[in-house]
Length: 330
Image (tube, rainbow, N blue to C red):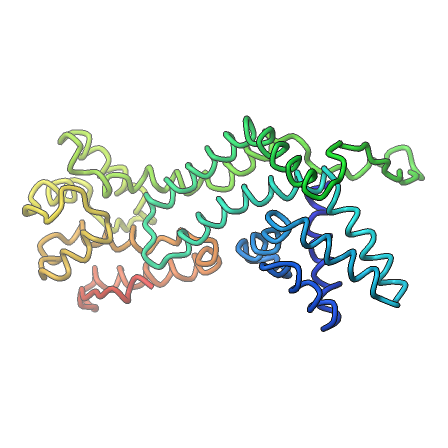
C-alpha cells in the first residue's frame, strides 16, 4: 500500500508547488530537477515524477519547509508540514528507490517496444530480460534500496527506521463480507506478468522458423514450416504451402548477412524484385512483420489483421499485385 500511496504523495507535492508562482520560485531556488505530475498511460512520466525525490529529496524537503514558514494559508501550512514529514521517513525513501529502479528498467523496454521497426523476436527477448531483472531485483534489490534510503535519511538528518503504521479498519455489517485486500504475494505478481505476455511467446514459437531457418536441419525446418502452415490455415484456406516454404528457404540465394531478421529479409526480397520466386516465404514474412507487438498497436490488432487477411486473399486470387514498401508495415 505504501508503494501505491507514493504516487499520491508525489501528486500532492506537485500541486503544492504548482499552485502558486511564489511557491514554484522557492522550489526552483532549492532544486535543479523540478517536480512533475505523472500520467496513468505513460511510464516515462512516472519515472520523471519520482526522479526529483530520488536524487534531491533533501532539497525538496527544504523547499517544503520554507513554504510552510512563509505561507499564510493554514491549509498549505498543514499540507507542506505533512509532506515534509513524509519525505523524511525511511519508508518513503525506500519506496522512491525501489520504484525508480524498477520503472527505469520498464520505461526503457517500453520505449523500445514502441519502435516502428520492433521485431517479434526482439520483443520477446526484451520482455524476458525485463522479467529476469524484476526477479533479480526482488532477490537482492531491496537490501540495496535500504542502503540508499538510509544515506538519504542521514543527509536530511531524519531517523532511518521503519515505523509501524496503524490502519483504520472498516466495520463489516455482514459475516460474509471480506476485506478488500490487495495482492501482496510478489510471486503471484510475477506469474501475472508472465501470463500477460505468454501469448507473445507462443506466437514467437510458431513463427520461429522465419527467424532461424538457416540454423535448422532440413527435417526440423520442414516440420516447423508445416506447423506454421497449420497455424495460417483458416477453414479450408491455407495462406502458405509448408513443404514449398521449406524448399524456398533452401533455395534462397546467398544473403548479405548470415542472420537476418524477417523485416530485413522481406526488404531484401522486395528490393531485389524476387518476391514472386518465393511466394510462400513472401506471404509468411509479411504476416510476421505486421504482427502487433506493442501495447499501443494491440488495440488495433483485430482490425489490422482483418486487413492483412483481405490483402492476402486478393493476392491468392490474382486481383492484387504483390507490391510492397516499408510503409505497408505500418
